[in-house]
Image (cartoon, rainbow over all chains, first blue to last red):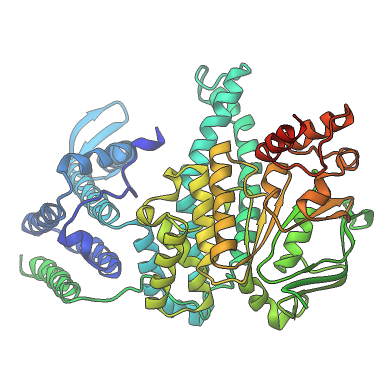
Length: 266
Length: 283
């Protein structure tokens, strides 16, 4: 189940988007998200969709792969649409018992669905085209000014990259513990949701114990290799802007400007 | 003074109950005096709980001695100003290969040490390439460590230590979690580093077979050095080793039994070849 989620996964491919500096991609995603909430009319949405379409085409990530990533969030999407449709007051189109659908609600639901889809597709495009390591590096650099107000930016980035490194190891371990307990008669698959949740407790306890042990070992190994925080540390792969990164910045800002113009003019 | 010298070294683990009162003291290391010359290959043997890992962690300054002193290349490990120099000089390879790899790519993990030391970027790359080549892992530099075998992971860990240019490497049971093939890989690498690069090696293990190539063996028991000497000297005392709950290499055991049965076989036979020679001499 865990393996089906494509958000946060990296799709290995050679493309302009893949080669962009992670900082550019992070900033671009932020601007893109803002622009989704700036536009409020059909030409505006069309503009955003076309922009996103061009980005996907440039990234060489198959469209099918991106759509697959949308599946797990479908439920949230439907709930949002339903709430918007049923609870927005206005001119009533359809009524049954206490359920009412208004014209305004329909419009709000459709807008919200479109916005959410665009939001998720856009941000998953960023994670699909950036290795987790690049992503944390980019975040560390972008958030560096926050160290002045004592935000431990380096430590957070280090924690993220260690977490990413240990996800496959812990997944494998979960699998082993699960099998070991199934061999001794544990039942993870039958019963209602509460029973299943309860069955997970004997799985989580050994997993946590082992995770702490690993953390202890890792901390010792890091200290033995002279790790002492971000100060005085050099980078093996320092981030450097290229020509295409500046071009990408320009395009993204122009895109935001376009969205604002479309909102004001139309 | 040698590269590693301990004087009356002691370490106590203090157990506390819920209120923080001392409920028990375990002396893990007790009055240990060793002096290791640069370029030596030292093996430290001992059964579980004999204090050998605690000793290793003290050399690397992860633990500071409760009593006595330990000098690494002339630097006192308890000196906070010298802490990072001590750790750079005496690198350490741990038991669990998964829990000591930090990077998500092999090359990134090897670069972790030099990054911490503040080595400039181009030199980091030189060091990474050089250490991976020494460990014959260069072709895996862009691989994820999760997909390597245990022996390969340990070689990556060794490369990670090598990239920090240490004078001495402490191996804390590096083969305990490996299959026989992986064990051979790791021991071969350690011996090669000692032979070719003249790096001082301290190998902590409970596999007898791994220690027969050492220049000197220390046998630890209850935190103390119980026996000391060349592999020949140590393994000729089969009874004493068994008293310390340690086995001896198979060939040594066979030779010992044959001798006890009356055959004129010398003491201190370490491998099959020596046994074969000795048996030929009997005929």
